[in-house]
Length: 368
Image (cartoon, rainbow, N blue to C red; front, side, top):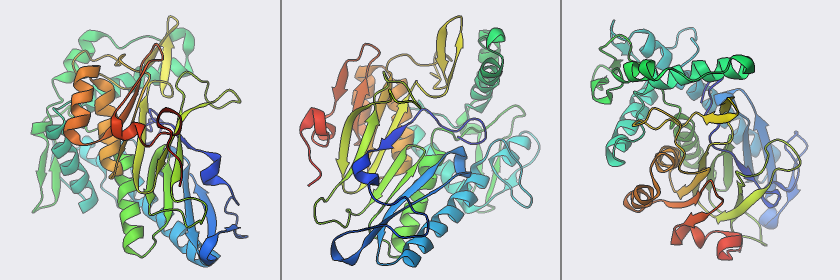
């Protein structure tokens, strides 16, 4: 999620229908119904990904005010949730990890809330996604980065080291003191990794804060975590179109293709997949979504896309569904109230009824 390890398991592309009109460059956008103009604004540096905001406003200055506020807030949350970098005057997730077995760390409320949210959804979803899995995930991260930089030396983490690391992954040992606003990892060797949730959680925070400030028609795409607030202010359509990438296609070139399009007027669409953050060992790909039972990358699907109102929930649950075998995954989707689309390694698709109704190809949905 953060430096050199952003959560690239997800890769949703906003289709051209959403991003038609002017890319925001300070000169204005395309005129729409009701006197509103559509603008687009992009920035990088937060969560090591491109963040794009599409919004409708009656003036350039009004949109710019919203976009700049969002950018500032995303950067604040990036620094707080970072697990790789220190920042002057800030106690962040890395600070907590560095103080494991030493002392509690006083942190801002956003970190407390993120950890409580992650623990709540850990319990709700059967304990599949665990933010205390940092020791295991960090080991995979080290081997993956070395393998990417030195392909001839690529290798897998030894299983004995992974098993040893798992001994330090008990989420129930993570001590959150809300009164003192501190977090303590009581055992040296423990390590938090919030990559499965932080970007979506941050996107939800920013969206809610903008909505509270009176912005009622915009969409945020944070490296694939897509959050829509309100309907597009256009007379020709009432829904946003979000393209789900075909995991069988090639990324970052002309052969990239969209599997289907989800039409929504409010809520979040997030995908977890095996095709972005990976490396190869002896000709086989190993991605970074690690099954907590086997301690190896999960192999049930190429991707899982989910729709639900809250972007933090969508981020967390998309990973959960990806790590579970299909029958369990389907039941978990039903239990947690999310709509989902599963893409299997052989190309087979499974979809919930609610998701199918929102899909252009599989369900005949439209943007009206």
